[in-house]
Image (cartoon, rainbow, N blue to C red; front, top):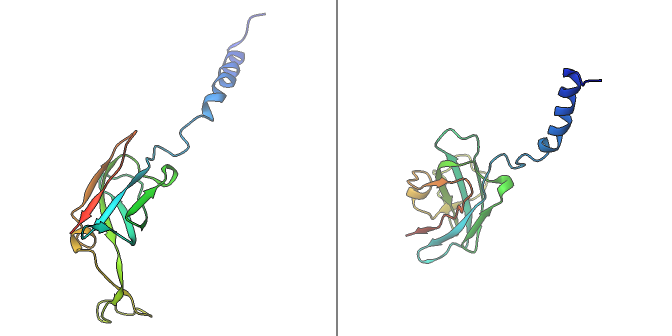
Length: 139
């Protein structure tokens, strides 16, 4: 008895099934990390965000602590260019009430220059396979 086309198709599907479960679980995302220095010292605290510039469907970021940040591959970025936004409030200085209308409590004044956040000029390119280490030295 010769196998029919249906039998061949079923056999082909059964052979292909093991490969289906082996696809990239992170969807092509890459881990990113780096060091951030502010006025020559590791930035004590803050946040970093990566905003897509090439139409990627990923945006990510994380917490800065003791001059370091790291975004795991599962939460990472797809390859392409990203604008970088770095923010860190000065816990000793509060923003004036007219800077943030409607703020229900005192908000720490931003201490990072605008070129690194609201008017960022920082751009990085995430590459497939990395390494994707991006360091920033903020004056």
